[in-house]
Length: 232
Figure 1 (tube, one colour):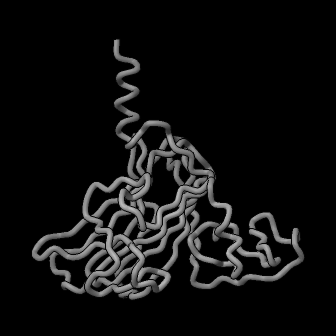
Figure 2 (cartoon, helix red, strand yellow; figure 1 turned 90 degrees about the vertical axis):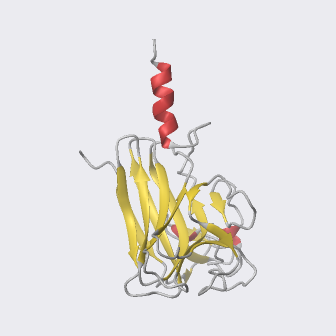
């Protein structure tokens, strides 16, 4: 089957911001109030990249969740993730706050622990982008991002826990699909994981290019709707 989904992945490990006259930033850059130019995909990502907060001010067109309120925003949890401010092995969120919430997955003794967090169903798009923060404090597990359409489930990104990376990291993923789709963040810890091992995610942001299908909770509902529509 022709692959309809492509991935553009960028890392926040090394970013170089430059100061330029207002209006002189490139089209793929955001112009801060003080003239600093930062990558466009770092706008509204829950981090003050400008230093003056201007890249976090106009975010009304973004779909964002920082997990500070119950209900998980418009996200759908099918299993596993726990909203918390600390777990064994992790005492802070990606901003180093000890009182802020994030989602975590901890081991289940003698069993494999899994967790799924799904986005709303999005309309076909070539410009949908997701930014999120993740923490891998585990030797026996993995974190991945999947895209589900009516026809297939595709792995778009995977972070192996080898080597063990005990620090928060940011990942930005761009999705391109000719069909309606749903994004799933999936974590897994094996049955032999130690009690202190943990996977965590925090501060998700979907760009304005991610437009939701009205009244549709999951990708399977689209299939059911189509069958009902054409049923004699």
